Length: 58
Image 1 (cartoon, rainbow, N blue to C red):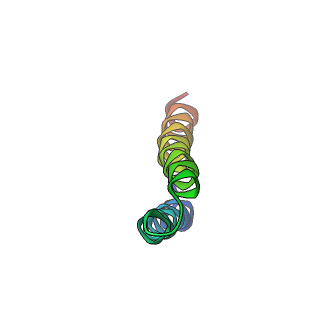
Image 2 (image 1 turned 135 degrees about the vertical axis):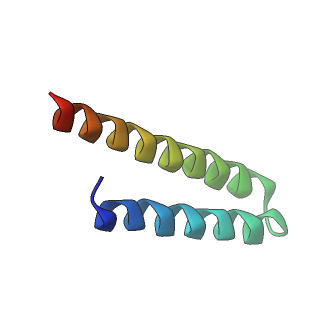
């Protein structure tokens, strides 16, 4: 995976983690939504990485 894409996923995930931490004190539902988005973002990063490795091999 190119470093720019990896950096994007890392920064985006950290921003979502920070937003989740801040949202916990304000609203539990928003915090839960941000948590789900964070997990999806991290998972999408792994999926993109795996697909790029497969294309590189094949």
